[in-house]
Length: 154
Image (cartoon, rainbow, N blue to C red; front, side, top):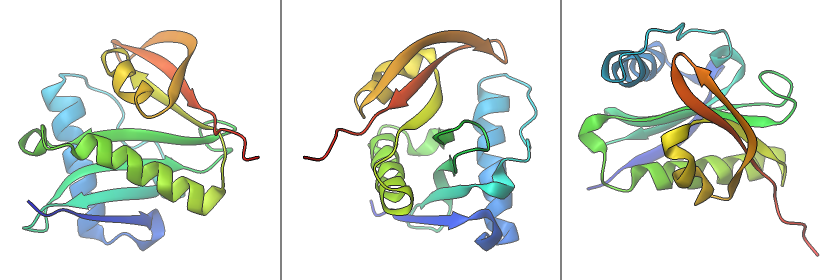
């Protein structure tokens, strides 16, 4: 199965793309995980959005990349989501590779922070993220703050 990856700043998204990103996030985070929360938090407008489309052009996976100084002092990755219909195909791992590649190209070799659902800690750890030890409930779901620190180039 073929997937197309693209990163766009919010200002470059079409109305349909933004609609489909929000629809996917609500389908997973609000409906599937039964977690009512304020999906539109204002950060999307200042962020880059990684989009994965399937062969039919439907958005099946997405994440937002938040520049430093908006959510954290570091670059942050958030709203990482894959549609139920596209799980088990390795998209989650490719999504993180694409995020990290874009961050390196756009911001350089910088630390990256994220707020991970606790049950996904090993997934993020497999991409070089380490727990900061800060664990908390966010929207009644256990989360852990994790950070990626690039290795120094010699």
